Image 1 (cartoon, rainbow, N blue to C red):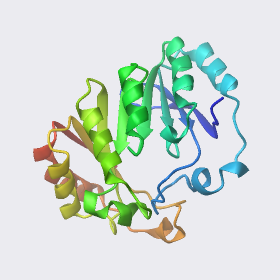
Image 2 (tube, helix red, strand yellow):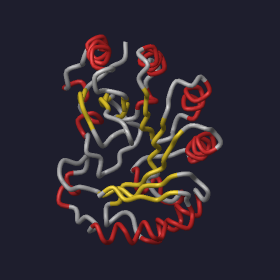
Image 3 (cartoon, one colour):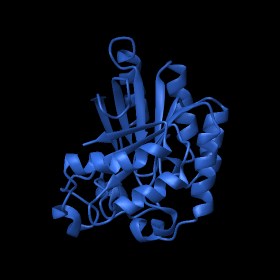
Image 4 (tube, one colour):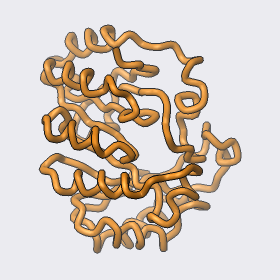
Length: 232
C-alpha cells in the first residue's frame, strides 16, 4: 500500500487541461529552502496516513462525473517503491496520471514511461547544474538528473520542465543557463515563489518576483524551448 499523506479531491491547476485530484506523498531527498510542504519532508510521521483504498474508491465514484486526472506529488514520489503499483490501479480506472518529480530516480521514470503508466511528467529544474547543491541544500548526483532529463526528452510522453523562482536564489543569468542546458525541450514554465509556510523559516518573508519580472525571465527562456509559460 502506498503511504499517502494528503489528498486534494479537486484541483484545476495541478494537471494542465484536466480537472484532477492530487495525491501527496511524504519524504524528499532534497531540502529546498522554499519548499511549501515542510511537514511532508520533516515530520511525515505526524501526518495521518490516508488509506489508499479510500482514495481509489473516491476516484472510481467520480471519474465519469468530473475527475479526469490524478496528479501525484510530494515530497518526491519516486522514492516510493509502491508507486508503480498504485499508478497501475489508477490506469485500471482509466484515469490520466501526471507525475511530479525532481528527477533523481531515472530508473523508475524510465520504467513508468516504457510501461505507459503515466501520461504527463513535470520535472522540477531547481537551478543551473553548477548551482544545484546550493539551491537544494544537499548532495546531488547530476548524472541522475541529466539521465532523467534525457529519458523524458527522448520519450513521446507529454512533459514539462519548471523552475520555481525565489528572487534571492534564481537570477536572469540562471534562467539563461537553464535554457542552454535544456535547449530543445518541449515546454518550460517559470513558477512564482509564494512566501508563506516554507521549509526554511527565513524564506517565509522572502521577496518574490513581480508578475512583470517573471515575464522578463520567460522572455530570456523563450529562445531555448518550444513553449514557455509563466505561473504567477
